[in-house]
Amino acid sequence: MSSAHGPLATGIQPPGYNPLNQSSSMSSPFKILVTGGDGLLAHALSQLPTPDAELIFVPRHAFDLTKPGQMDEHLRMIQPQAVINTAAYNLVDRCEVERDLSWAVNATGPAALAGICAERKVRLVHYGTDYVFNGFKKTPYGETDPVDPLNHYAAGKLAGEQAVLRAASQNLVLRTSWVFDWHPTQAKTFVHTIIKAARESRSLKATTDQASVPTYATDLAVWSLELLRQGAGGLFHAVNDEGVSRYDWAQGILAEAAAGQLIASAPPVEPVLSSFFSATMRRPDYTVMNNEKLSKQLGRPLGTWRTGLRKMLAQMK
Image (cartoon, rainbow, N blue to C red):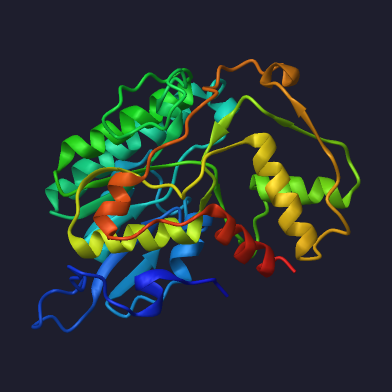
């Protein structure tokens, strides 16, 4: 069960609403192919009511971004009007080791998919990352701020989003960060990590010098479909409100988990600097993104991640 909300989930139609199936002569709903069909965001999409669209979920192994022929064949068979690409190589540290594979999935794969979609006049929704910024700014980044990736993961993701935007003006790139949500078989988010450590009475440490915006995957899924409905294209920063440090994020998770009785009490978290973990890869320390453009596009505030966190924790009971 999902915690559905917003115009899409409630059935309330926002100003400028256009049903995905715009032709009254069409007997079948608007088809959307969702790649990475077994992942966190795909699961969030699968839980949303979509009476005007048919979402077809294809798992990573069946829709491989490194195999253009396979992707083209799926589009030929399914004949979707849109593709939502949730697949990515997001093991940031391993991207430095598996450089060719990560580049193929994050850069050349989306470029190939965008080309295939353009040839077939299919709209493409793709997801970017806050890591395209170097973190030097210290105030929230907008869509027009210059990019400067510090690591191989970020460089690959940047190349991928640029290729998608070049391929067609109707394509969407949604940059997001620190995505979390409940999933029936996966427990890989920062939320899961913190709660598991608390339950096992392990010491907790979190960085005070890394800041971004936690984003509830269900919200991200809702925004994605609303933008498709509107016929929007281009680049948007798709994050919830309120940037926080990893330390404050961890504290927020523990407080809510204790309030929801998932843990007996909130254990202390030791504040540390990023250097404590002796990371071998450079990460930007401040990548809070400004979501004002998306908020204006959708005609409402995007809401705090704290609401999504409470909904996720309620599903974990």
